[in-house]
Length: 254
Ligand SMILES: NC(=O)c1ccc[n+]([C@@H]2O[C@H](COP(=O)([O-])OP(=O)(O)OC[C@H]3O[C@@H](n4cnc5c(N)ncnc54)[C@H](OP(=O)(O)O)[C@@H]3O)[C@@H](O)[C@H]2O)c1
Image (cartoon, rainbow, N blue to C red; front, side, top):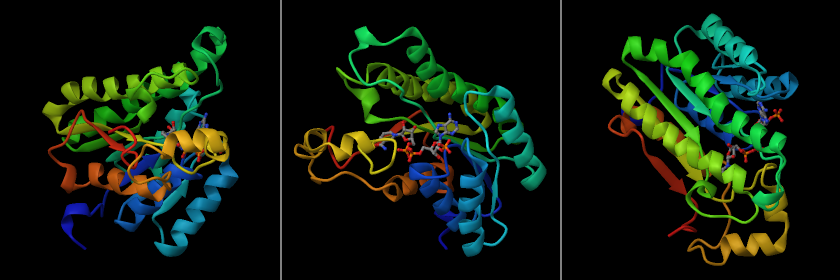
C-alpha cells in the first residue's frame, strides 16, 4: 500500500460509528491499517460493527458505547481505548444531534442548548481528553464532521447550522493552539448524505430536489464518499493541512 494513506500502527476513535458516515470512516481507517474504536450510544450496535470489521481485519476494532452528552462516558471511551490499544493518534468527532426543524424563532432553550452541547461542547471535551498525549508525542490528527449547513443561512435548521459553523471555527482555533506540536485539526463538511440522520430530507421529494437540482453531480452522497477524506486528513498525505474544512457535496455549494 502507498505510505501516503497508510495508517498502520495508529489508533482512531470515531464517535457515532455504529452507522452512516462514522461507520464508513471506521471501516476505511481499519482498511488502511488503523486500530479503530467504534462508538455510539448503543453497545449492541457498536459490537456488531466491530465484529464486521474484525472479520475482515482481525484484531483491528473494539466497541465502546458512549453518549457524547456525557463527559464521564467520553472519558470512559478514551480510557478503554488506551487499555485496548495504547496511544491514541486519531480522533474523529462525528456524532451530532439535531432535535429541531423549524424557524430559529420557535426553538426552545432546551433544544438550542442540546444542539450546542452535543455538537460543540462535547467535541471540545473529547478533544481536551486526547490532545495532551498527542501534543506530548508531537503526532496527532483530529477530524470534526461539520456540514455545508455551517456555510450558509437556513430558515429551518438554524441552531444546527450555527453548531456546524462553530465546528469550523473550533478547528481553526485549535489548529493555532496545537500546530506547533504537530497536532492537526480539520473539518469535513458533507452535503446531503444518504443516512438515517438526514432521512427526512432525502425521503421528501421537495427537499431532495432542492439539494440535487442545482448541484453538478445531480445526486446526494453515500457515507463511503466521505470516508476517504477522513483517511486523507489522518494520514501522511494530509500532513501539511490544518485548520481547514473540506467540502464534499457533489458541488452543491459552488
Ligand atoms: N447525513 C447527512 O446528510 C449529513 C450532512 C452533513 C453533515 N452530517 C454530519 O455527519 C455526522 C454523522 O451523521 P450521519 O448522517 O452519519 O448520521 P447517522 O447515520 O444517523 O449516524 C449517527 C451516528 O451517531 C450516533 N449517535 C447519535 N447520537 C449520539 C449521541 N448522543 N452520542 C453518541 N453517539 C450518537 C448514532 O448511533 P446511536 O443512535 O446508537 O447513538 C450513529 O452511530 C453528524 O455530525 C452530522 O451532523 C451529516
